[in-house]
Length: 124
View 1 (cartoon, helix red, strand yellow):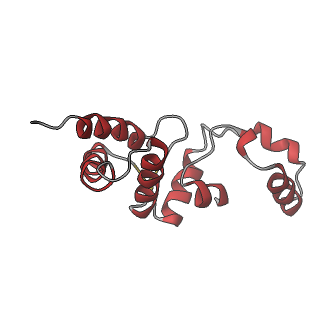
View 2 (spheres, one colour; view 1 turned 45 degrees about the vertical axis):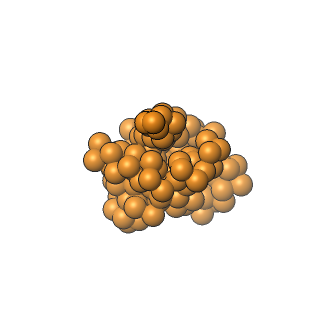
């Protein structure tokens, strides 16, 4: 749950957990830290649902993608040209809207590239 609070996404690999955190939690529940490697992150749908509900987050939808694309085009891209900063602004906005992200291919990053393409073309 703490990982989601910090990252606004679920880990995809056990290796993403900081080892001191793993050791600490393992000590609390009196389980060897190595047992975490057996946990099926992909199959933890029930836990993910509980965490989303507790933190009031939700997965991104196509409607979110459309709204965020429009937000990027009007609010961010005209004033911020650096792609990493655009992505950071987008992630901050997603967090503010309680939209969950994924590590490898967040919907919002896809709409960021669409928005940049749209804002690069201006009619004469």
